[in-house]
Each structure stands twice: as structure tokens, then as C-alpha cells.
Length: 316
Image (tube, rainbow, N blue to C red):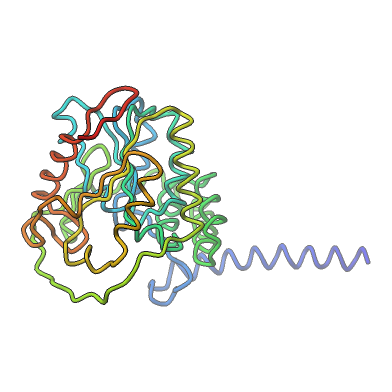
């Protein structure tokens, strides 16, 4: 019996070792379309690598931005600096509440924000969070954040990406990697403070959407509620913001009032879609994201609606 257990243990260790090495070789040598269950994305888009490097050196800010690409492409720290407000944009691609919760847990005490703007796009309360977890695992040092994301999302792609990252970081010195601040192919420029500015372009698409409803994922709602509880426990004033998308996209959802009622129950909340008059073509570069003209209008409007005080939030 002892021999059997010893043999089984040795076989298991060998199998894990072989799997990790094979996975690394597979992911390192083959193109991504041949590795559907492995998505390692260090420095490929969204500037999460640079953002995580910068946030670790950032202390005591006035405003913290949380959320998806609507956040890191939608809240420009330079505009807030014009109102003497220091800020950091901790948005990430397709960031769901599962990722927001871990980012808050990791950085809230060091950033010590005086105010939080949490962008709550309903679509990010629907998804499984796999894409955003891969973004964090790929672009962060191996640690609690990466392990938490893999286990919380609980998907084969996340586990494989974590294993790939572990082997890679044991072989290569990723600390020496420097992400170019300018991606000419994408037309993106990283701005200090976590913002990504898109070269000025205009939305020329007019898609026809089938009417649908937002159906929020219970797992995402639970993470969201824990984040709100943490923010309130720290006594940090906050506002939930639904950032503008094109009218064509927004009104393709038939239960927007229901979603507004859901967010309103957690605290100060502003939906900038119904009343904020932006042009679907001139103020957006696609149906989801504002161009820089739209960003300026949106940020100025938001600042006008929020009176920043140390312990209070006033909307008017």
C-alpha cells in the first residue's frame, strides 16, 4: 500500500510538472488561435501592465476610478487635475465586480482615496469575468491577486494562464519589460494616472440590435456588494456612474429603469445615458467608447454634478 501511494504521488508530481512544461511550450511556440484554453496577454492591450506598475507607486489620491474600459478610456486624470484633484484610473478591460473587489482589497489602503467613482456598466455584471481575470493574471506579478482571480473565476483558461505565468516568470525577467507608452497601430497613448487616450476618430457604425434585457449575474452582484461594503466601512464617499454609450446601443436594452433602481439602492448613482445629450458619431469612436471630445464633455459634466468634499458627496 505504501509503495502504491508513493508511486501515485511521484506520478502525480511528474504529471503536474510535465503539464506545466508542455503548457508553457504550447503557449510560447504556437499562435493564439491554436491555444484556445490559454490566453496570456502581457502588455497586449489596455495598458494594464503599466497601470499596475504605476499604482504600486501611487499614494494618497483625491479620486479613484474603478470599472471597465469605459473607465480607463473615459475618465481623464488631466481634466480632474485642472480642478486641483489628484486621481488614479484603476480601470481594466471588461473589468467585472469580481476584479474590482480584488483590486480594491489590494490597493485601497495604499491609495487612500478621498472619493471613489465606480463605473457600473450593466454588461460587466453579466459576464463570467474570464477575460478581465486573464488581463490581471498576465500583467501582474505572481501573488494573491493572480491566484484569487484564477480560483474565483474558476475556468480552465484562467488556471492555464496562471500556470503559464508561473513558469514564464521563473524563466524570464518580466520586471525588465517596459510597455511602450504609445501604440501607433491601435492609436492609443498611455497617460500618467492610468488613462488611455485614443487618437481622435469618430464612430461611423450604426448597428441594428435585437431588443434584449440585462440579467445580472448573482456572483457578480455578490462581489459588487462586498466592494460597496468595504468602501462604506472605510468611510469613503463614492458615486456609482453609468458612463455614456451610444443611444443606439443603450436603448436596445428594454429594462434600463430596472437596472437604475438596482444601482440606486446602494448609494449615490448617476446614469449619464438618458439625459446627457452626446452625438453618437461625433463624441464616440465606437458604440461603446467616447472619443477625446466626448471624454472632455463627460468629465466636465460629471465634475459639475459632484461637489467633492472629504466626507460627503453632493449631487445636483
